[in-house]
Image (cartoon, rainbow, N blue to C red; front, side):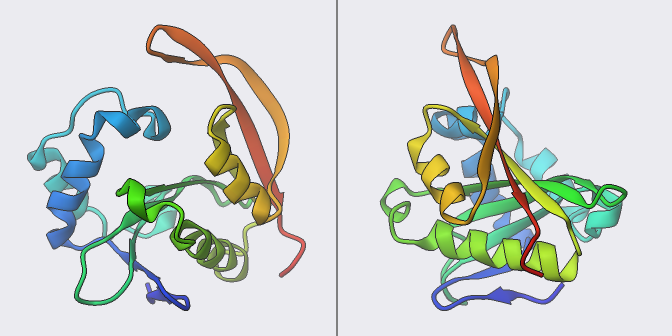
Length: 177
């Protein structure tokens, strides 16, 4: 896969040296709610995952890319296509910037823009969707900025800290490419 480059960031395939970064992200309990993680991941399991990261999206049904600023710095976050459905030409999108200090610097906006273009132009997807907690204002603002529309709310969908929370589904239909 070709690296997807923007003005200030690029998206690249995962590399073996991303093991520690992914280990830290997957085991950060403060973001488990956003990533739907339930249990810690070992370095062994992440190493196995990275060994299979060479599978293309048609094999793995997902594509996880590292969000980077330049060649000398480690990944800042991850952006995913998941539940890839080539029959119906759709996939889910998830994004997470690790460091809270980097979350309002337009890194997520540029990464999402690159992934939308890639998804519609190169994968020929008809639609993308995102599942977002109704309390996650930052994610709702990010996705609606790119034309995603809230098409419904799943009531009491996620149990977080003993409380059921609603989750909205946002959808973007490909009308540009």
